[in-house]
Image 1 (cartoon, rainbow, N blue to C red):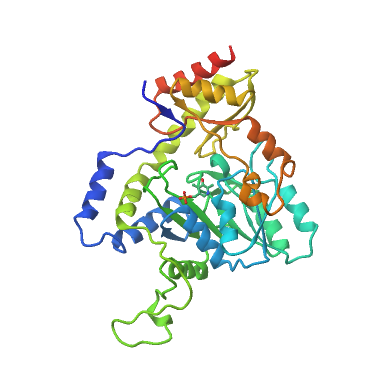
Image 2 (image 1 turned 90 degrees about the horizontal axis):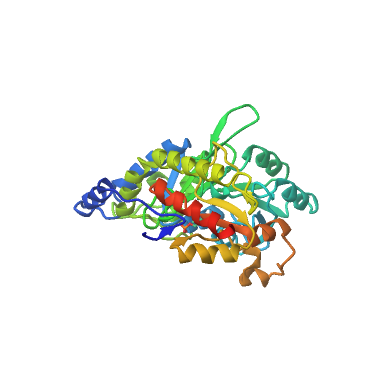
Length: 383
Ligand SMILES: *Cc1c(COP(=O)(O)O)cnc(C)c1O
C-alpha cells in the first residue's frame, strides 16, 4: 500500500492546464490572476476584501504591521497553533502572551483571555489572535465583545478553516474569515491546507482602510492608488510611502488557487464525511481519551484524537506506512519562547493535550479502503 499521510494536496488535469495557461501568457506575476483569485476567494468566504500574499506567514506579518504592533505591546494568542501565529508579533517587536486552550474545543479559552485582560490596566494588551484550530471556528462574537471592552484588535488565524463557520447569538452563520467580527483574518495555501498554491496566503477583511494599507505593504509600501501620491514626476512615477515588503503571490500560484477553489466545497464535504466515519469507528473505545468534536461547522483541516501511549501508536502506524502527525508542540515550550520565561506548567490544558494528541489522515482523496485500514491499524495496536 502507498504511504498514507495525515494530509495531502490534490492536483487535477484542470489545475495543470490553468497553470500552463499562465506560463504561456505575458504575466507570470502582477498579472490579472491575482485580482481574479482575490475576488473569487472573497466571494467564497463572504467578506468584502481579500489581499493575496506569498504565504500565510507573510499574511500574519502584514496584519501585525497594519495594526501597528510595536515593541512593548502585548498580544494574546493560543499555544496550540503553528509557530507563525505567534511569530508575527515578534517580527514587530511585540510581546507574545499565551493563554491556555479549552480542554475539549482545543481553542483559545476566552475566560483565560479575560483573566489576563482584567489583571492589567487597559491599554497594555493591544490585540488577540485566536486560531480556528483544526478547522473548528472560534466564536468571534464573544471575542469581539471582550476585545472592544479593552480596545483590542482581533486577527483571526483561519489557516485551518476555509469553509468552516459558527452561528452567532442571533442565529446568523459566519464563515471563518468573513470579517464581521475580526479586524483581519488570514489563510494559507501551503499544500497541506484545503487549497494549494505551492506557497500562498490571503488576508480577508471588511475594513477598507486596512485593505488599502495591506495592498501597499505587500508591494514595498508603494502607494497603489495614484491619486494618493504626494508627487508626480511623469508617467514612470511610483512612490514608496512607507516601509513594505515584496510579499506578492505570483500569477502562476494564483491560477492554481483559482482552479483549486472551484473544488473547495466538494473537498470540504469529503472531509466531513471522513470525520463522521472516524467518529463512529472510535465511539466508546477505551483508548480514546478525546476526539475532535464532530460538528457540521467544522472544516476538518485536521482530525485529532487523544490517545494513551501516543508514542507507541505513532510508531506502529509508521511501520504500516501511515504517517500520522502531532499538531502541535505547544509554542510556549519552543526554546525561542522559553527565553522569555515560558515553561512547563504554564499552560496545563495545552500541555496535557500535547501529551496525547494525534492527527490521523483526513484529506479529500483519502479512499474508503485507506480509511478502513487506518481504523483497523489503530484498533489492532490497542487490541
Ligand atoms: C500553515 C499555517 C500558518 C502559516 O502559513 P504558511 O503559508 O505556511 O506561511 C499559520 N498559522 C497556522 C495555524 C497554520 O496552520
